[in-house]
Length: 247
Image 1 (cartoon, rainbow, N blue to C red):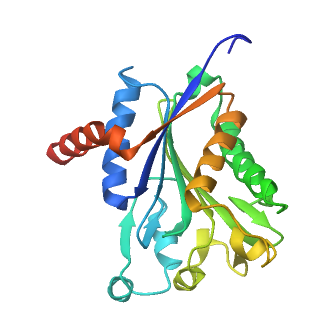
Image 2: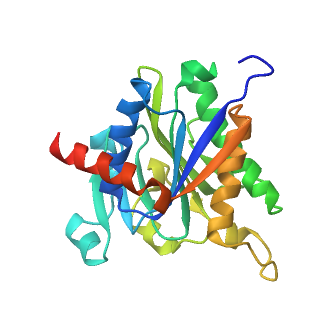
């Protein structure tokens, strides 16, 4: 990317969004990005309680400790996906980002991209006085000591990205007791709220989402981030969901 080029990341603030709907939206946006109908986009959202399994299905199923019927009784959905990674949980008060990007246009390979996702979460934690780090060899995501605060599970198709990252702001960590998070046994899960002193008041979840988006934009080399609220994306979201449902 030339030094003077302006590269904009468009961030869609979607609020609480069901996992299946988000998956359909990503599928349509990836197709649009490949065809050049849209630029680089990141979806910024939270999910209702949801467990997802990565494409290494047999291993991921072993790390799901509770039968699907019991998860449903807890009010949680279960989705089997084609992303990388193992089993993880998404829920309220967790910041989820799904970047729909052209890695070739950014001059990035897959490894550098994943490192960028890690770096964005590490930078976000640092904004609130928390020292986070990438995982040790064999450990994905971002950690505070031996406690996981951020998960990564991506899919890359012909140089275009979808799926992404999840950063724990203050979710109900009890949901993680039903899985071996990301297939890594013997390690804990934490959140930003747990890692900052009790007397420290965190910004709103929405503000933290925006901070994470800006950290991601910087680490991947974007010069600007343009935010759009769900009301501004409504027609595009509806069209994408309708097209994905009919396909």
